[in-house]
Amino acid sequence: MAGLLAFMDEELDRMKREGLYGNIRTLESPQGATVKIDGKEYLNLCSNNYLGFANDARLCEKAKAMIDKYGIGPGAVRTIAGTMDIHLELERKIAAFKGAEASVTFQSGFCANLAVIPTLTGEGDLIFSDSLNHASIIDASRLSKAKVIRYEHSDMNDLRKKLEENAGNAGKKLLITDGVFSMDGDIARLPEIVKLAEEFGVIVAVDDAHGEGVLGRGGRGIVDHFGLHGKVDVEIGTMSKAFGVMGGIVAGSAILADFLRQKARTNLFSSALTVPDVAANIAAVEIMEADDERVKKLWENGDYLKAALKSTGFDVGKSQTPITPVIIGEAQAAKDFSAKLFENGVFATAIVFPTVPKGTARIRAMVSAAHSREDLDRGIVAFTKVGRELGVV
Image 1 (cartoon, helix red, strand yellow):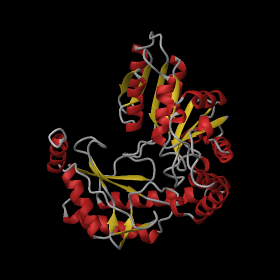
Image 2 (image 1 turned 90 degrees about the vertical axis):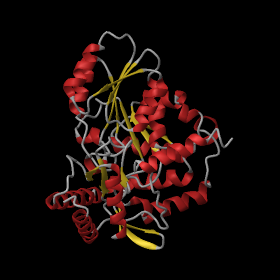
Image 3 (image 1 turned 90 degrees about the horizontal axis):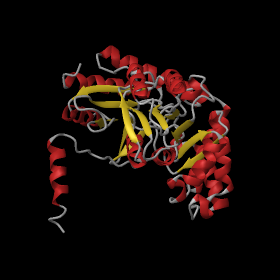
Image 4 (image 1 turned 45 degrees about the vertical axis):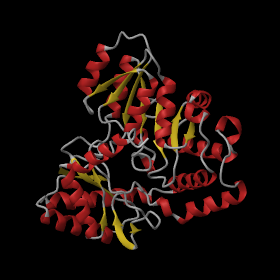
């Protein structure tokens, strides 16, 4: 058996030589502006906890209360015995929050893409996919057995060309894009995408994982941000980032929700969200509906950090959101930068190939509404110090 598995050792050795092997840190505290690792406190600049909900007392209390009433696990898939009334309550609240007819929840954002793409498309169909779409879109598209046609990132001329070239195809056509591209922080050109889709008769889906709780009124997402309600067929999202919990979202028409409940394999063959997940997500939606203070704070923090790092001389790309990519270049250089930051009390992980293209390895600095101005200043000092030590700035 050892001989049959030798390829693993060889691949791991190669990853280490090329600077692609990840050092996975273990947290000993809740997610927050700071975290504890190896008994020490570090400024946290690499989680997706956009609104600071991951350790919010209101979410914790809601989860505790519902555990007392419903227990922990659903005990089954949704279609057999796993649908509780709180699952339906959460789905109603999400639909209302996003201005959609209906919504369906899944175990994760990845599972939501696995639910949508292979269920709406199959052999003989076409999927038009942005070249920088998330891995979950790529994997779900492969599973669908549809032909995938990649267009250059946010290039509407290339998209039009690809649509024109395939206009005569008899199968269904699905166009899918990230809403916010997580590694660069830029926003999809959704109004232009919708216009092209209408012209060529194509279904439009947007994966708004990094737009939920960030874009739109009070964090309602990219469709709300651009005022495109009723023009985007499928909104896909996650509750593991701004919501601070876990779970996937699909929002759209009542027919879409019914179709996915009956046909999506991640709904038919994987157990429902757990009780504490559902409870905490309900609390998160209720807080976001009540006010937009945390969303405003998130954007203020993102603008502040980005401007400070840019003025210091760092390449922060062309982000349009609170995501702040600090582009270093080679994988090992980015890993060295991350290690030096850690020595200076800042937890900010290097992002390398295959997550980003070779030569664009980076530190992706992720702010939260939970960060204070003092927290950010501490991070700026550390980035500046390390950048000068390593000759990056």
